[in-house]
Image (cartoon, rainbow, N blue to C red):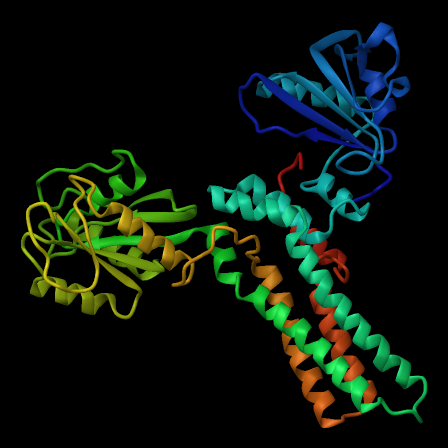
Length: 450
């Protein structure tokens, strides 16, 4: 990335639509736009109009008119990248938006790299690294809960806690390094206790954030749930009920499902990847045998199993065999067809896919499993990702070593080293100590126009 370049890209999804937006950002954004834009308020060039104003006109390439557009002028620093920006709104469509972008590139802009607009926002201090990652999380959010958590991170809820922990570490480090400059003066016991207390507070704050890593992973990738059971227990009917639509074929004929069927649903705000599987039995033909093999594979890969049992016929020896085969995987027994049968008094959820009774209770149970087996508060605002978890785990380990060092009276230079390791690890979350390689990895996963 060369920050001196003026960059451009299509910022809206590809495909047909009413509008598309081409974003131009950089020191020469206004002059680039001037070279390919005609019209505006009384013909005034875009580099002479006030900031945050919209102007009607046409995109021109050579002597040819490419499209009728609206050009929005945004002057630094009150822009997404904190650079001069022009956003050209043209007609939607793959061909039209591409031709407008080509006209902008011919006028002097460079095609943006993936994530380069957001990377510039980070480099220019508009966003820290955790907030920049939240932009991608918000774009890819699949449920209301995912979007809410991503928006909270974009607003700085995670960053605020990270800065609080890091500031405490830096304060302790400053005291320790100050005493290193005066080796004849020991840290007074009262001061030592205060510094140790600050370290423990920072450690507990980091541990609290780390406890949200399970929720963060589920919100980003979804909880993988396999629906398993004997033939004709109602697995496909359950999939349709949880999805709220007739996605899987349902018939009274045992063995209807011959392959796995995968769909994503929002269950109490959690993204749940549901996998319907073939009924496990001795296959009647080669196709069904292959379906059963895939069902077993899906069960092995799942994080949660819904073992559907026909309540009208009760728990059978075949269910015992299936349960033994599934092993220690987390399993919820779903007693289906409760409208025509009464399940025995045992753990599980009683439901009827025909009437819908018990489906809400099952959704509650799935949501609790997604939350790691605990009730998840509606106001939860922090759910960290894998990169955050790795950095904070290293920071917590260094803090634990530093606290032990303080208590055992090790030399101050070794204590300072552990505190600095902790501060650097925690600072990685918001980009205080991020390397170029790390930034390349993070922003390369962004879409081209973001």
